[in-house]
Amino acid sequence: MNIDCHCHLLPGVDDGCQKLEESLEILEAMKSKGAERVYLTPHLFCPRSPTDIAEIRNSWEENSSHLNSAGVEVLIGSEVFLSPRALSEETIPLGGTDLLLIELPTDARPPYLFEAISILQERGYRVIIAHIERYRYFFKRGIFPFSRSRIDDDLFRLKDVGVLFQINWDSLNGDGQFEDLFRNRMIEFVGSDKHYPRDNREIIDFSKDSYNLFMNDYYL
Image (cartoon, rainbow, N blue to C red; front, side, top):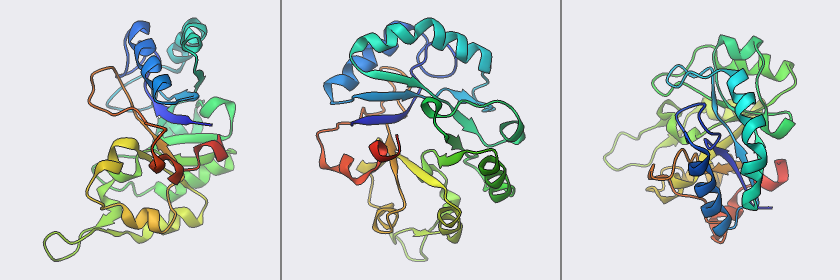
């Protein structure tokens, strides 16, 4: 099954689509590219995009039938910012599964990373780290100009404790700096991270062979 596991199309709850018409426009475009299932992942506990879980659930209840009218199966989830609230409060896993999509701070590696993931796992979640390529602290640059980045040891530690990784579709068009991640088979998921119609984020083209690098349909 062709699955986009990360996007912000639930209307009016975060920094993604504000109107149902925008969401439907994107879902139609996703369908034209071969999408069969889409997980909506509004931000949760994110300081840059404050949200309310009750508003997320209300928007889903109000709009889910309309969203599913586009010919693509649409399910609810969330993108959970890894904070103390995420460790104790209610979250929304992907489509009612035990898979929880989390995002990390982009500016600095959180010192509580492994402890927090352990707590989430004890709560019964399988953790997916969203857009792993954004966290530059996980990639070491070589000492020579134009040298390829190397994978930080913490990424291997995360894999050892069962953490799954997601990458954004747009990042596949980069300069190959994530080649080592693919060589080591470290990325399980791809998502569009689409927010609104003209946000310059590409919709996943499921006809391309590069989608076959991922295991979205195995886990979801």
